Amino acid sequence: MGSGNHLISVHPDELRFQFELEKQSCCDLKIVNNKEHYVAFKVKTTSPKKYFVRPNTGVIQPWDSCVITVTLQAQREHPPDMQCKDKFLLQSTIVPPNTDVDEIPPDAFNKDGQKTIEESKLKVVYIYPGQENSEDDVKGTKQSPDAESVRAVQQLKEERDAVLQQTKLLQHELERLRRLSRRTSDPGFTFTFVLFVGLIGALVGFILNLTLSAPPME
Image (tube, rainbow, N blue to C red; front, side, top):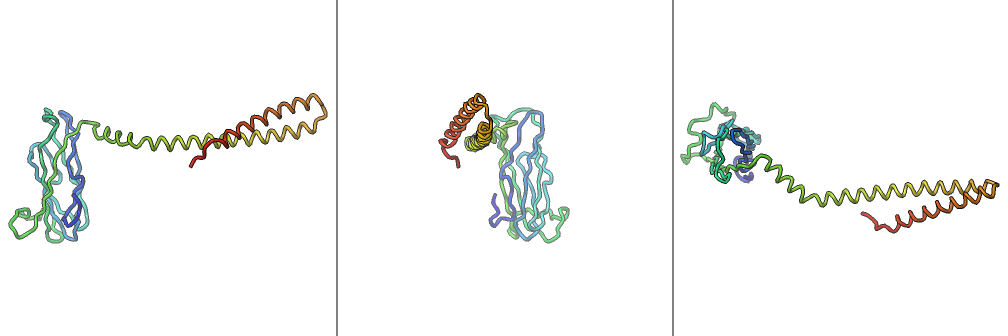
């Protein structure tokens, strides 16, 4: 229920309970006062013996909010097809400033034409334990290709950076060996270094070729 011109907003707009036999289940409702007036509220249900509502009546100060906890009592059997026909009714009305919950008149929520009583109807939904998590997982799975793409691109960038770093090290080593080969006077030693330098040079060229030929990544 959006704010609009309503006295209060209710979040969420339905009561969802994880249903397990012989176990209680709770659901929180947040009620927001959208007006500059003090607003009193009252919660009613079509099955008062099944639910425990606290607080079921209260006063919310201007622009303030309140959280209501609704507890589904332990049930001994599943409803047919897990469908629940229970309903909740949240009534709200403006009351005088600084009104306390104990000061709410008994007829505050009676429709007598002299005051405005707003009503919000909330349905009840039963879900299996873990069902909401499963729905979240499905949503996450739908988004996973984008996440996987980001991780794949990041991994490729890290690998390319590692190759470039290794190439720089090989270039430095190649230059060092060239300088060393020019300094030595041993022909055999020089020939060995020339071969080794040639191999390193070929390896550097091969890595650079691979790196430069790879498609650019954004």
